Length: 352
Image 1: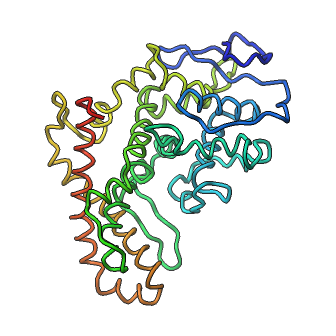
Image 2: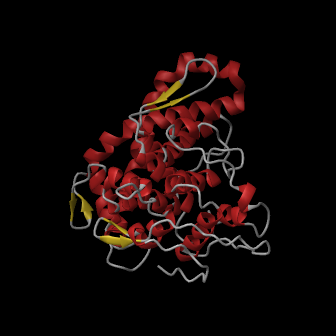
Image 3: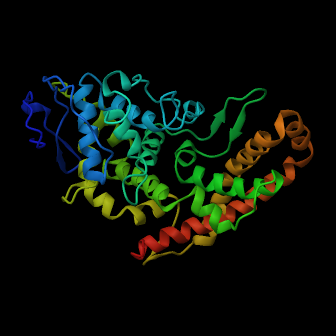
């Protein structure tokens, strides 16, 4: 398949296999060296982001698609070179490969491929692309809860990592911050403002796209097989760039169809009963989801409390107040979950 770059490629017929009903291009080895004077700009839309991913794949031809997926997520989260260096992403995504620091080939600083990828978080209108990769990694290797390693007893968040890394973490941070601010001397805002801040529309779109890509690829196992390759003779996995190109493209592939149906499919995936453009069991869903979001919000509250008041005062306050904080976190989470489901319904109705 000609991707419009003009570079010679190795073409092997049996590398062309299908992803569901769609024909997809398989990873091929780029033999030409990357010109030293090439400069890159942050993506302006999903199509130009796909081109950046293709450039990364050319620079790391020996990396499997699964490793490239991890490399892309790590541009944004969890490593010393990431935009967000929080190390606890390793507990959220314990099965993630560690392909290494991409800057050794992708460069650093203005004009480098690495910097263009990093700055593409926030440069694509209506989409936080980083949330897509965090969600995909979690959905590929789900866990029932997340155990965070901290000094003293580990902290357990009673929320699947698939939610922790996506919409559940966004809603939990909104609820936790709303609960914490009065107790840490910060200005109190409205619940809606906390929701818009911590669970922005761009963030939520990225979260839902992760679910959509997995569905379009035939579920977790289907995406895993596509990234891994295999078969006889053994084929390389489907390139991440091709998966993204199909999902955000205009074709008739299963991935493109999944993008069209993403809001409806997502609502069903979290237990919603969609009737027309409404989630008919929305209030029941609020009560079901809020305790999980509240578990995250509780941890967020104490993190913020410790940041301001220190470990000693936090330990004393925790002993006395944690039962109340737990209840309040769940109640505040009900509000955030309700906002979220209303947001999904707006998208179902085409009001996004």
